[in-house]
Length: 277
Ligand SMILES: Nc1ncnc2c1ncn2[C@@H]1O[C@H](COP(=O)(O)OP(=O)(O)OP(=O)(O)O)[C@@H](O)[C@H]1O
Ligand SMILES: [Mg+2]
Image (cartoon, rainbow, N blue to C red; front, side, top):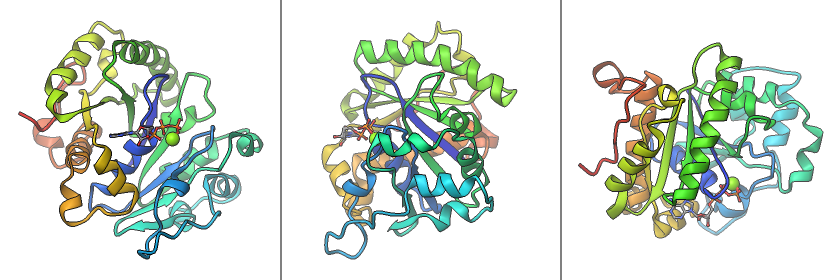
């Protein structure tokens, strides 16, 4: 499965959300920081080993994008990934936006991510209809759009979805499956998710939206995750628990998850799934 995670202005969190979706499942997952504006996954994540090591400077997503132009195999993405936690590996982004200038065409990378034998979460960062990473969003089984609960951020999200969904649909020859995800504290989760659903409901992309998801705003959980501490009590941080629920929701939306057969939500309804019922 390929999950693309992206966001719009005023809604940071695509890298953190991507990593949370990667580490909160036992399923082997590769988190690929495919943000054309550069990334900081290698800077923020503590490499395994317990001594605060940094990750080596290569390979990065640019290494992967370059190789994907000439070779294609189900193991290509894994061969460029660094170990992070037990079941999660990472392909960090390049350091600065200028370094990606040589990659004119991100379509081969999209094909490599799609062909990967491991589950892939691709962090696309900010996206719009003409972004170079559109082929990756179009290739994804599910597109996660991260937002914050502020009215302006949700209005930007709505506008973004209305512009993006037709573009993705025309490339896929099928509607995309989109899960907007709001990052907010647990105590507000149910109310905020319901309100975001109400704000998006009149949108003409309602049919592409497969429920509203939630990730906990949880700074200490974020810190533990980037430190690679995701076992024991750190597997039960609000961030990890909400990411686990979100992973199930994404699988359900894609029709491949444990709940898919029994509970697949109609794509034109807004399921509120915060795990907080
Ligand atoms: N669920 C969360 N709980 C607490 N803090 C969060 C959460 N998600 C993101 N943050 C914080 O918000 C900030 C931006 O997050 P992040 O780097 O993931 O965003 P981004 O969209 O990838 O940004 P960039 O455009 O710089 O790549 C970081 O300081 C991060 O720790
Ligand atoms: Mg980022």
